[in-house]
Image (tube, one colour):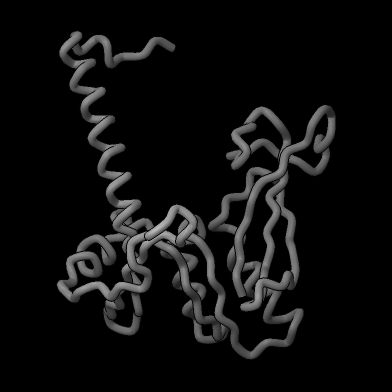
Length: 193
């Protein structure tokens, strides 16, 4: 099962009873909103959807959805795929509880999870090319992957050299901008609020 969330916001007086203020994925924190979660199967067919108040964080949505899926569809086991916003140490502990019988694939902030930044990314194994560099602009993005096992956990590291080049250029542009501002004096870096 694939699970993700987004936010929707209300215009006008809508949402005064159901909606809450929260972190808006639409960049509209000034509006009452709801969080919508959708579950798809492996063939991208919708299985179910859920709604939460707009101040609900993604990390609080995964476990209730897993439990609801297991009970609603009488599943002995399931594998859930979610993004990095759904990760917390507590969530992973709960997913691993033997009564839940849940396998999971969760995206991770590479450098924010100690195991990933210190062990997985340091693994010297070479990447395998899944998709070569683009020949035309319509080709899919290049992709390299490798598997790294740490105890019973399997990590799949994905690397897009095209995105890495863009990210490097963006970082260099930010640093050049900061250097320029510093040449104008350190007070130019302080904003007025």
